Amino acid sequence: MNRGFWYALGIVALATAAGIASGIRNQSGTGGLWLEVGRELQLLTGDPENTERALVWVIPRPAGNRVTIDGRRPADLGLTPDSGEQSLARPRFVVLTLLEGPVASASRLAITDAGPELAGLAERYPDRGRYLIVQGTIARWRPGGREGTSFYVWLVPVQLHLPTELPLGRALLVRSGRRGVPFIADSRP
Image (cartoon, rainbow, N blue to C red; front, top):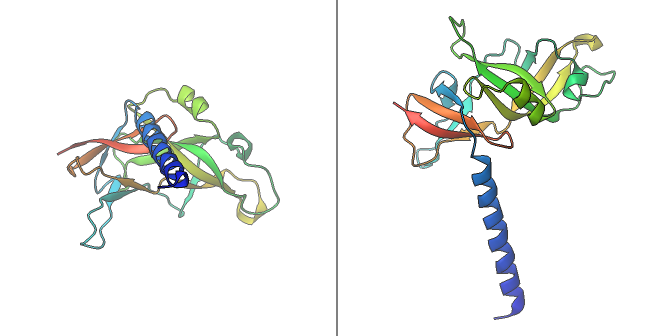
């Protein structure tokens, strides 16, 4: 065999090992939110031949993807001012919390805050059992060009994948890793 093949094989092996190590390092978070399947998480159903189990977030939003984050201005989120109705979408971190008490919608999950830096949000929301900080994408929305505090928010990833070793229970423990990537850590009936 030639050397090129062995070099290529070595590069693939190193890249695979680095990806696995990065995933393990990310999934060393603590705390997390217990989210109910069918309420805060919805199981995707599709092709019966597909054994993958994916769930999507259920966050009530009265106007599509637009949400208002109390007291936050576009500059706070690192969104540059422009003259249009909508700014370019930027990767940011989003704070999720479970609302307590009677909730009118089916889901208790709410977007509480957002920001450009994970460390700043982690300092502002240190309770890992109450808040979940995840990656997201945010764009400003100004109806009719007037100044406003509504934002389009998308969570990244859109889907959470349930590991095959965990049973699908009524509630799933969702944690956020060191880079703000959410993952399912546990299940309870």
